[in-house]
Every structure is written in structure tokens, then in C-alpha cells.
Image (cartoon, rainbow, N blue to C red):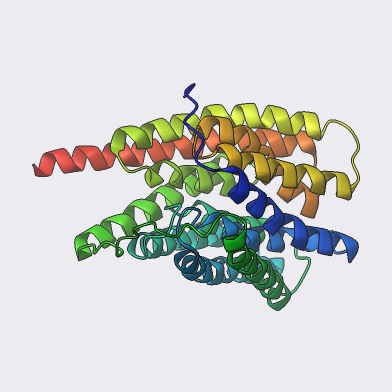
Length: 334
């Protein structure tokens, strides 16, 4: 948790990822449509994938994840629009179920297609955060903004071959072949973790249970059981520290452009450290996520930050429990 891994030529990718987010959000800011920034931000997550892959592989992977993230944003927007006529309970149930299905499906697709980073954190976050937010645009508008943002990311990736990210000469193995049972296992683990995390958080009555769903799937992305448990614990520690950073940044009145600057800075720092120390990266990832939500939909800061801590603890505990249960089942089968 306290060890900082060696640098891995992180600067250029971090700059690219930060620019991938900055340009779409600044365009919306200048167009006086900052309430649409959540759609653009989730589309910009496309840039995170395929960091060390050769350009042609990275473009292929980003094209796939760009489509997936765009569909997730559109699904969330559809739920949010339909929820105008629903009770709060119905809205919460549908959002949790949608997040769970997205977690299961996308984690399995990402595993089979060998996309990196693995897991379903970004897809679950995109679906559930948009589904939980007030309606600011039609689903078609949300889809178009997310797709445009993802396309910008792919264009930057193509251009980055001339800025030191061509990664030529790297031997890229073919995607691994997974037996049917492994695909079912992946589907069930992610679906169960997201469902339990969202359900428990909803029953507590805390605002925004989607944070718990996101936290619940985080541990599962690590390759080994011990690392999965550590990832869940790191999530809690890093989130608490990151909430402190967010509390400071939101402790004084800020104009939207100032929050945009902080969002871009946090994205840059997160990418700079995420592969070197996950807990440290969360000190930047947490305020990034909170500022993204706050920028699009301002809300009481205390409620936002308190919910993030509580639901991260709930979700991480659920994720760790799913890991330990999987270990117990595997040992019984030996």
C-alpha cells in the first residue's frame, strides 16, 4: 500500500488521457452546456484503455470500449428519463438491476476481448451515474455526446503514435481463449457483486447507491485472490483520503471553469500513478469522480462526500466477501 512502483513511461499517456477529457468538457463549458459534461466524461474513459498496446491494437480496443461506454451512457439516460414517472423505489431497483447486468456483461466481454484495464468499473459507473442523475438531455443527445467524446479519444490515440506512444516492436499475444465455465464464472461474479452492493446500499437509505456498485466490482479486477482483497482495502483507504482532497477543493465557492481545471488535473495525476500505486491514484481518482458528478449536477457537498465514503465501504466489503466466497467454493471443489 505504501510502495510506489517504478515509472513506466507514464507521462505521455497521462497527458493524452487528460486532453481526451479536457477538450470535450471545455467545448461544453464554452457552449454553456456544462450539465452535459457527465456524458462527455464517460465517453472520455475510452482513452484509458490500451495504454501500452501498439497503435493498431489500441485503436481497435478503444473502438470497442468506446461503443460499450456510449451504449452504457445511453442506457443510463433512458432509465433517467423513464424514471420521471416512477417512484423512487422503482427507480432505485431498476438502476441497481441495470448496473448489475452491465457489470456482468461488460466484464465478460472485456475479459474475452482482452481489454486493459480489465473489469467493469467504468461501464458500471457510466450506466448508474447517468441513470441516477436528473434529466438534462434526451437519450439521443447523451449518446451523441458520449460518442463524440469517445471518437476524440480514438483520434488522439491515432495521433499519439508521433508523440512516443507507437509502442512498435512489442510482441502482442493473441487474446486468450476462455472455456465456457470461466465466462459463466466471470459473468456471475461481477453480476452478484454489483447486485449485492447496490442492494445493501439502497436498503441503508444512503444517497447514490451506485457508488457501492462501483466499489463492489473493483476487487474482482485484480488477477489473484490475495490481490483482490488488497484491492478492496486499498479502495477504502484511497477513497477516504481522496474525499479529503475533494472536500478541500469544494470548500470554497468555485466557478464551473475552475472545477473543469481541477477535473483535468485530477485525471492527469490519476493516470500518472494508477499503475504505480493504486491507493495513491485513488487520492486523485476519488475527487475526479466526485467533481465530475458535482460539475454536472451541483448538490450539497456534505451529503455527496459522506455518501461516497459510506457506500465505498459497503461496496468494497461486498466485493471482498464475493472474493472470499469464491475462494471457499474453489477449495471445496479440490
